[in-house]
Image (cartoon, rainbow, N blue to C red; front, side):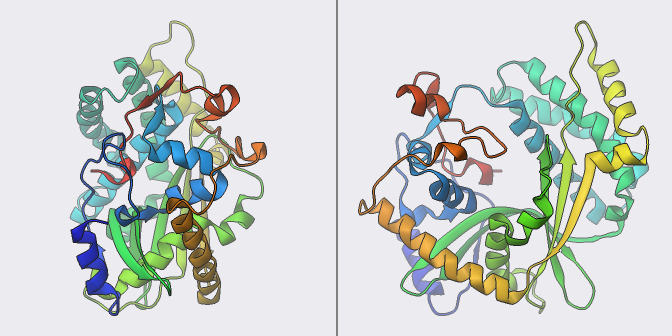
Length: 352
């Protein structure tokens, strides 16, 4: 555990004061092994609870060669919504400005990620941009009320030390948004891009691990975040944007492809409801207390595993494709790291 983290833990042990951060420094896992003092994100803990072998490879820095387009579409749309909310807070923008806003946003985004060699080919960035542009303006028109919401935070990185009894834990993550409601209430906002929406999603969301993890840290953070007294947060807006499944035809240019997707999205009210779905959720404080009790045991298991007192093994094969495909199926199936690179960065999703 680093000296800086030890100082934070000592300072917050009794007061539960939250340490806020803009983003972590770059830590290449192949050169600097993960330490418990680096913190724990919900994605890291979820991975551990699903499959310890996968988590071990992730913490060793192994990543598959190439990145799936679905992941990059989600990253692009998150960045779009972050910048849109910033502009809404500044004022002077409405849903009618969506296409102009997109054009100003997209070229710097493409240049940034092309320079980083994020994509297998620069063509991939323009393909993703074509899909996102087709969906973005209809999204803004469909959720016109978003332009009148009070956004207190967008894509905020948190770094929160929480007392879990025997041990303090450094919990980290990035919240998509925080909205101010009436009567001293706040609402957590989470954006998701999905190709498919499971039938029982609304029921599963009532005990969603990520939402509850973020609510826990948010409620610890409340006393230091906004300089105003708010009620404990129980509200979550779960915002789903369906990723277009329409294929690019042979010889089709991207402009026509964008127009064709937009026609499908805006065909009628049923089509719009198909692409844009929201769940307004309430997590009672008693449910949050139950989650905190469960989390304490899960964090204890993770601590013991990192200390070498618990074994590493693969999770059940049924967890390899639970709505998405695990990136380490080939490694497990063929016992080889061919097709993988050890170039992973710790908590890359938290970096600016």
